[in-house]
Image (tube, rainbow, N blue to C red; front, side, top):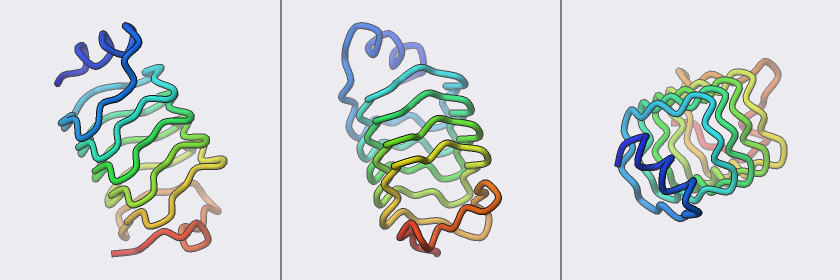
Length: 122
């Protein structure tokens, strides 16, 4: 699936895209609140400034994804792969990050403590 197809189907009312293959997609500033991308492969995707509040990204592969300034409020990111992801200035209010994986190359906003959010370092 490519960016255009995802946006078209979302605009048509579809919200459920489990295990979608979206490697390297460009969704800069995309408006996709409530989308379900459980288990999707979004590795290398550019989601900078995307509006994803209330989305389900549980078990999604977001390795090396750009989530800078994305609105991830209330997003389910439990057990997601965030290794090498950029989360600078991302809004994570109420987000579930339990079991999400990160590493030394994952970038968080200043003051963010992944341990307090039950994340796992690998």
